[in-house]
Image 1 (cartoon, helix red, strand yellow):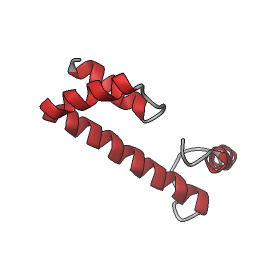
Image 2 (image 1 turned 180 degrees about the horizontal axis):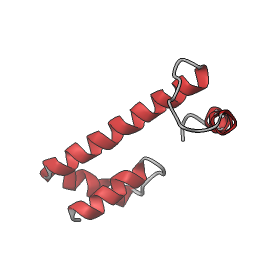
Image 3 (image 1 turned 90 degrees about the vertical axis):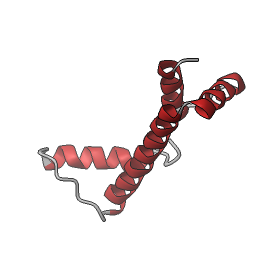
Image 4 (image 1 turned 45 degrees about the horizontal axis):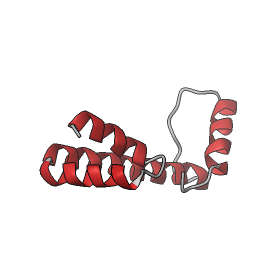
Length: 87
């Protein structure tokens, strides 16, 4: 597997479970490629940050600065707060 294929699978792994074969191929590639290890860590960190931001929007502790109407902001907030946090 090359870096491009691994990057695609690592990205997909954030959204869906991978097959055993895919996970093993990624693990083997990461064992020998420090660039892909960094990429995977960056994606995981980004997902954590976005999750914290989403939670902050839902509980009111974060006020996003958007050039949107109050109605649009309310619709987005409603959708975010209704989502399953594990997604």
